[in-house]
Each structure stands twice: as structure tokens, then as C-alpha cells.
Length: 304
View (tube, rainbow, N blue to C red):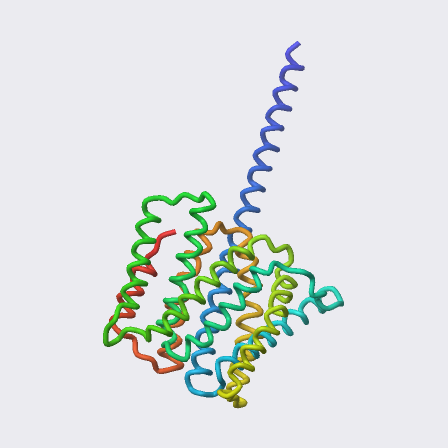
């Protein structure tokens, strides 16, 4: 009479064991997803930092004009991503209809970014573009219903203080017009990042958007034809910015955005200005000013 209840009890224990294994498996899968997201975000930040260094190095030294840099960057990125699609499935991207707002946002970022670096140091430019990106993404996150903890509000206010302090008039302040151009670029990139979250195939999605950006980039280039300038080294820097830093960087960022809410995606970019400032000192011999250090502190201290 007691054997049957024991059997049921054994089955119950077995069921609990299977349930525990299932939960453990879910935990491992979530951990792998989290690590993959961190790796993709870190890769994207390295690529974004490289874009700032390459652009500043190319346009500020007169090796290539900003319009030609933008066109070359867009073309080389589109070619690289199109080749990646071809290697993956044996055919090139089919220039499918895409979100026009994504095209406008990315094109705005690319053009204003290049022209801003004619007037800004690499570190200052990176702080401004990331500050503007953060503010735009946090604003949209709040409007979409994300609610922030008190510590996040504190960090956001500190980051805003750092942004404002950097652009205040003074002997070491960045060029006002350059700062305005870079702030517009940052806001546009924030919009592009938010629109990118729903992309199903990041390589093809980026290739399509960049292909749509190519014609307007050429138009901008033609408007500035009187300032046209290109050297072999300038062409190489612009191509590296497009094919490597933009192509691979945007794919990595797309993959990271799948797992990140808007507010976390904004704060994930905070390491980039420090990387750019270090690169500016190393490769461009740019000074590390007290203003840049003070402005960087609150931004880098933004909590997640």
C-alpha cells in the first residue's frame, strides 16, 4: 500500500529535478546572451573611437576634404557589408525599401560628424557626440515609458553638467560652430540607434541604409567641389573608417541593441570618449586640457 505513494513522490522529485535543470539552462543561456551583448558593445565602442581618430587625422591635417571623406566612408562601408552579405548567402543586398528616418538620421550623423572634426579636437568631439547621443536616447527612453532610478537621474544630470561645462565659452573651449555640428551629429546617431533596434538582419540592414546614403553624400560632395582635396593617405584613412570602423562597428552595435533598452544603450557608449582622448594624445599629439578632464569625469561616472 505504501509503494504507490513512494513512486509518486519519486516522480515528483524527478519533476523538480527536471525543473531545476531547466532553470539552470535558462540561466546559462541568459548569461551567454549577456556576455555576447557586452562583447558586441565593446567592439562597437572600439570601432566608434577609431572613427573619431581616423576622421580627425584625415580632415584636420588637410589630407582629404570632409565631403570626400564622408562619401568614401559611406561607399567603403557599403561595399564591405555588401560583400559580407554575398559571402553569407551568395547574393548581394537587394536594396529593399528601408525606414527613411533611419537613412536621414545616419546621413545627418555622417555628414555633420566629418565637418565638425575640421574644428574640434578628437577628445572634445567624442565627448560632445556621445553627450548629445545620450541625451537624445534618454529622452526617447523616458517618452517610451522607461523609468529611471534616482542614481540614474543623478548620473544623467552629472553627464549633462559635463557636456555643458565642456562647451562653455573660454580659452580652452571647443569651437562653438564645430560643437554645434557635432551635437547635431550625436542627436542624429541617437535616433539612428533607436530605429536600429528592430532590425532582423544587421549586416544587410546596415548595407541597405548605407547604400541609400551614398547618393546624398555624393551631392554634398559636389556642392563642396571647390574645396575638393584628396591624397593617397587621406583616401586610405577614409576607407579604413568606412570598411572597418563603420562596417564592423555598426553590425556589432546592431547586435548589442537587440538586448539593450534605450537607457542602457545610451550608457553603454560612455567608454568611447576616454578611448578617443587617449588616441588623440597618442596619434594626434593633442593636449589633455583641464576642461576636458573635468568634463569627462561626470560623463564617465554615469551609473547604469
